[in-house]
Amino acid sequence: MKLPLLLAGAMLAVSAFTAQADVRFGIMNESYPPFFAKDASGQWQGWEIDLMNAVCDQMKEKCSIVELSWDGLIPALQSKKFDVIWSSMSNTVERSKIIDFTDKYYNTPSTLIGPKDQKPGATADDVKGKTIGIQVSTIQSDYFNKYFAKVADQKTYQTLDEAFQDLAAGRIDYVFGDSLALDAFLKSDAGKDCCAKMGDVADDKEILGAGVSGGLRKEDTDLKAKLNAAIAAIRASGKYDEITKKYFDFDIYGAK
Image 1 (cartoon, rainbow, N blue to C red):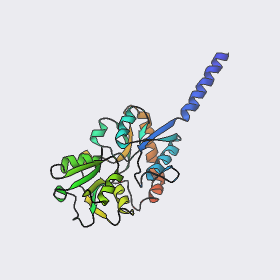
Image 2 (cartoon, rainbow, N blue to C red):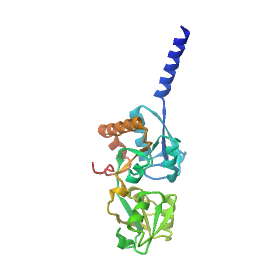
Image 3 (tube, helix red, strand yellow):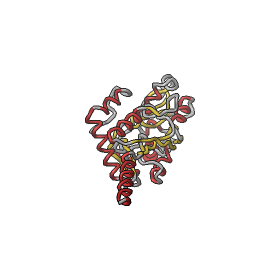
Image 4 (cartoon, one colour):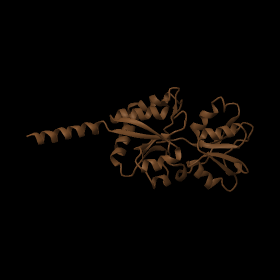
């Protein structure tokens, strides 16, 4: 009689462990306000962190954060160092060949910013002969290669903060990135006096993607279904809007 009891106990233990499974969220190890940044105590905070916590509560899962460099996120996901990329990553055609994605959780334009005395514009003619700062391994870098490479120079950075510093110091002419991250810089002490928005680039969904989503290994279909259900439930309940209003005065979800 002892063996069945031991087996039953083991099964209960496994069930308990599974219920408390730790879903590991991979994020870039540099601040990307207002989406994620560390506070004075070293804790991550921001819109994307609040959304992650709401998703985890909805799934009734224990979650943790794994920090890596931006260009190391996809390789680390594939090598199972964490379970989902949650780091303002756009769902693009090229990335979808390698990994899978959840439904989107926000979508914003790609934008150029530059010195206030520079003529606004975001076309190839506008940037001719200029140097554009771009974070490495981003959709904006791919966009540059397709539309701007023949007329302008690209300077790549590991982080946007490095690009912002060079822009403020006059070492480059533009920074090209997601509109919300660039807007946060323009509102900062370092950016508000020196720089302004030059314009949003023309949309190209093949390169710029279909919105920001969670990145997953292609085989993790159960986790994808759980995340999609949680995102949908949070939007339906109003929790998504409640979180968003803490950081933005407009809808960042984008067109349905």
